[in-house]
Amino acid sequence: MDANTIRFLVFMGVFLLMLVLESWIPRHPRVDSKPRRLAINLGLTGVDILVVRVFFGAAAVGAARLAEVGGWGVLNLVQLPSWIEFLIPVVFLDFMIYVQHVVVHMVPLFWRFHVVHHSDLDLDVSSGLRFHPVEILGSMLYKIGIIFALGPSPLSVLVFEAILNGMAQFSHSNIALPEGLDRALRWAVVTPDMHRIHHSIEVKETNSNFGFNLSIWDRLLGTYIPDAQKLQPEIVIGVEGYRKPEDVGFWSLLMMPVRRIPLVYTNAP
Ligand SMILES: [Zn+2]
Ligand SMILES: [Zn+2]
Image (tube, rainbow, N blue to C red; front, side, top):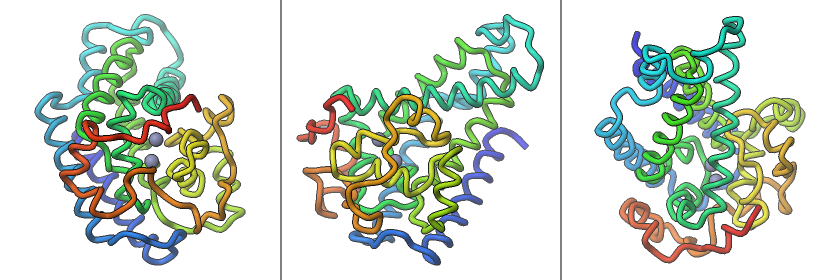
């Protein structure tokens, strides 16, 4: 099986599992129509996939193969035990995704694109796919740059991407986990309740809990908020300025970066 098939199978498996769990044990009441949001978020994903395919082909794993053949990057220059060489990229790339997420919140130009992700009025597994194509392109370039500098094995990049993909779907899902399980999981990974705080309309809460996979970066760097001001089911999801379903239709999302953006959120976290 090639990298794209594995990625697709992991994605579909987790996506369907989360959809079932969301209808079985929902955590947060809906304000917008789920079929409508699913169509918009999946439509945007379709555009993202097309854009990445057109510009990058095999993208991240391909970049790792190139680096391997060319002997580029730190890990292709040093000799380390193979399990360490495997583990370093999986953890380091996660940290760099955390850094990227903080930066796209702080720099107004980048926030113009990232706000598309935050404009969803409800949060569910499909929100984890809702990104402006330009942000997806930027992320891809950023990731490829890191891969060239680091020189990870193609397998470690594949595993990293599968984990990130699966965890982003889990952390965006609208599922109610038992409180004790949520708190226990949070010591290692980002849970749905933890990431929902990041999607709160409150500026201070939006500018917290930036992790997608490992929760350690938020704890270490002081951006962790354990609880929102409101109870979880009462958190208002979204951003100021885009409060109605008609504000966040498919074309509105594509055009959002050139519209009036709620820049109050780009104050330092
Ligand atoms: Zn964000
Ligand atoms: Zn999110």
